[in-house]
Image 1 (cartoon, rainbow over the protein chains, first blue to last red):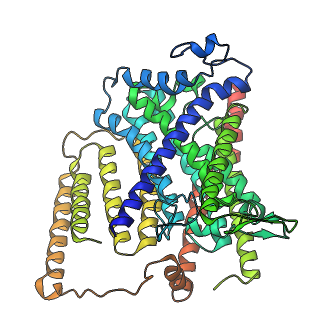
Image 2 (image 1 turned 180 degrees about the vertical axis):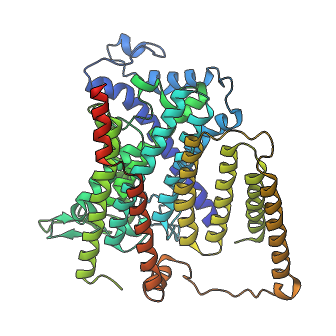
Length: 371
Length: 177
């Protein structure tokens, strides 16, 4: 019991630290990666000693973006506008961040490992209803944004809040439908079981990842997830050219940093969901519990612990690559118009999602995988 | 579920339910209602009714309360400074409240209070058991409800739809003027 509790606490802290570090990486990628994509130089001013620069190394802007920027934000004045609802104005950033952060606990980041005779599931909380938990906590993310817009006593903020709420509610539906079709494919709500179900190969070479059986659901979740995280091309709630900064116009200092952190954490969460549901989670192609079974019939034996650790690394690699992909989408596409956004959500994604669920149901019944 | 957690969540649910009717600001009332729903949902989950608990969060806290928020915004409800409403309304309101309290008193009177607690079998309240009941024992009721909801959705869309002819005439007026 005690060891279970300690293991659970350690895993939960690990997951939070992972989420925060991914957010920091995304902040760096936001600044320097966008510069790379747009052929700019990007932040390159701050150094500690200047030694590397004197030796001719380029300044990668790591200190600028990951240390100087956050310090600047957290030391700025925390301003509450006149006429604002002070209580809700303060509560809103945390209401936005909290649901995202608690969602990370059900993401499996590795196979079960055994240390000193104890079997430890590499998932902070192995819930049987994991997928339901996920949908529930994502659904609560609306309130922080909505209340931030409302409590600021500012028209732009309120408009941003209304836009964000409508957008998140609309795309949640498509997200749920995409997840439902994956649940039907694997017949379980447990995320660890879903990842297990993606082990093994078809035809001797193709990994059994759900992206090959549910390609439509993958695209649905990718688009809906990008919309949930309110990034370009779905950043209408912020829309600088129309709404100044949208729902967090009236936020400054640490609270604004919390909103930015929420967006980055959501992006990391979307990457993790895509990895878990469609890209085999911690599964590595052709890697079984005892080692690699390559398509040609070759076999490379590996110890069990190494296989587990490689799984964790594979999960992280997939998540980081997807994060970078989402970031590249952000710096490539222009923003949608609001009617286009709603049309895409309700007339594009939702019918496609329903169609996908129906086809999946037919296939599941036809192949006789119903108890 | 440990007793202290049960008591804590129950107290939280009652306090936030009181908050719904005590607050004057409609948005604060809404937040209190969400807190109530969350506390009750966690109670459900703690008592093994996992699916019901999560569905309560997804559907009520995550979607219907957002709809309430929209209604508050769109109707531009303001902070109420004092009691409003007709005297007759208040009279009937207090009469109904008194009736409810009387009914509750008789319902919860000591002879009825001998509630027996039985342990449910493992897996009770899981998605599998719920789906099994829904698609065998209560299939007709389930399907009838879904058809009813669909009819309501279609009806509301039909009511909210602007007739194309009206739009045309308005556009014609605009060009004429």
